[in-house]
Length: 257
Image (cartoon, rainbow, N blue to C red; front, top):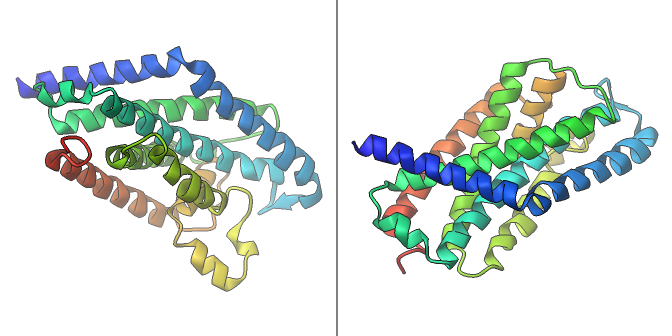
């Protein structure tokens, strides 16, 4: 019976999250589409003409998978952190906590909402990319699984950020000072083979590098890192972050205080 109740709870949260994204589409879907279009025009078209090819691909082709992944990461994270913090701020999180639904159902519902928004925006950015370049998927299974795992990782990270956030400013600190720099330094616009050996080693400490390159391998068939390592890192982060979310919810950190 508890399983049935929790399934209803998860579906309800997902429906609420999807409704929220579609209701304010001008804030959730349009801005990333415009931003990515500008990236394609400025970096891909204008600057790409001077750079030429990279790893045997046209520069526009090379950066397209990275830009798609960047949109998935930022929107998955942003959806969960804003949604769950909103639940805390308006105190309707209390209703979820006193209901029969489990902590896992609360987490899974919000994470699923983040994943769906990330995939929706990622699909839109992919369509935009096709207006600028040609993309032929080399490894469909790798492409799909990597984008799903990456979206789950950053949705869970957004949930943790929302748990600790005590004011609206707190939900923008991590995206501004951590997520954005890591994304730009994650091989979206360049191959780390262009860097000196020391900085290649430093770059390999950035988890986003593995996500971007594994996704690029799925689309183009080229990567700077081992795809197997990317799967290990992503699955490890999913387990670690989900466990952290469960622990925080069980202790009531940032919620029952």
